Amino acid sequence: MASKKSNIIKKNPICRTRRDFLTLTTCAMAGIGAASTVWPLIKSISPSAEVIAMSTVEVNLSEILAGKGKKVKWQGKPVFIRKRTHKEVEAARAVDIKTLRDPQSDEQRVHKGKDEWLIMLGICTHLGCVPIDHETKDGNGWFCPCHGSYYDTSGRVIGGPAPKNMVIPDYFFSGDNVVVIGKKGNQ
Image (tube, rainbow, N blue to C red; front, side, top):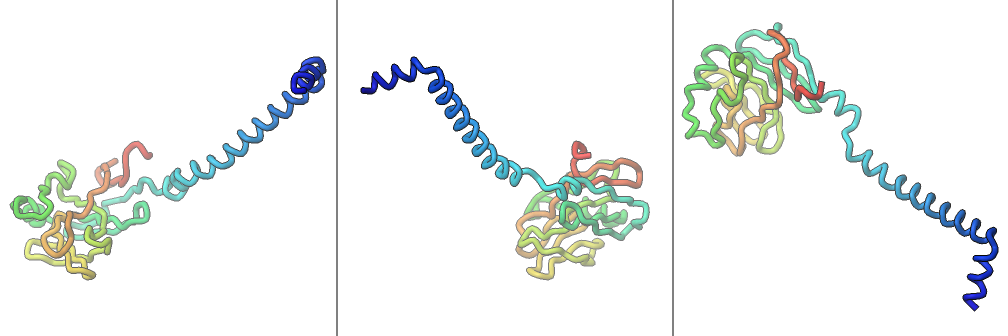
């Protein structure tokens, strides 16, 4: 019986054309269904337009006086920009890094030749609070009032429960008085 049916299909070109059309249509619909399932997943993984727009921030430094700072927002996070005094730079360099919880020299945290500028994320590394300015014996540091973490004039943890130093973001100087926070390639 099966051989009679297949013989009829082989002999009748209209049946074969119809079967090819149904196979092609089914495959096309399956492809469209797969693409419409995968596309939202890919779209949700890629960064939003807001994040791409905020990938770099350009800041004019000419208005910041020695011993003062400025807070800017980058990628939704606060960034502290501080023009340290000569005394604060010397105090940061004089610290014995072996005594620090997260040993990092001041030279590792600033750009060579621009060591008066300290640029770091203004987020406490303990639980993500925003520290406030805090006067220390060596100049201004930061204090997290939520849980009691202290940071020195280089943003290194010197007390309290914070496990790490405040994070230094990628940045570069595009001019004498202009800093761009974010990676160079994102421009």
